[in-house]
Length: 178
Image (cartoon, rainbow, N blue to C red; front, top):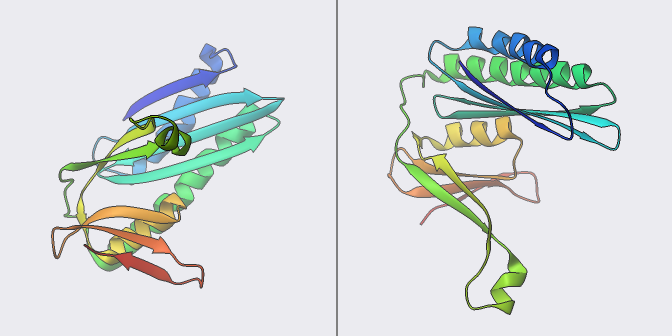
């Protein structure tokens, strides 16, 4: 397990680092392979924020919690990740999709809208590489729900094309295919 800890507006002391590593290592029991965990600890106006991002075999999990106590925020974020992992493992048992391996990756760019109209070359705000693991539509919907996002971009295992699943205003799930 690779654990990376980043602290903003707070000193990352050895007791805090040890506490985070101890709590996050509980996640290891859910996976057989090496997983990457990124922990962000931040303080904003007396609110302690703990954000945990887990990348395991192309599955991304996110736990974000805020409280007045840093240790409580860490505990709550780890609990949230564990609940997501239990839910995900149960779905994997039912679907039998553990054999899928990560494929190539897609680049996701978020462009500043104002820069499109002001200059000739748009300014990129965020650029991310995301694994383009071939998955079924059901898996993509499950991943979107695990990440608690409104949409999810994925490579369709049946067609090999890039598709998007999203939450519609009427509560249903939409699919965009090329």
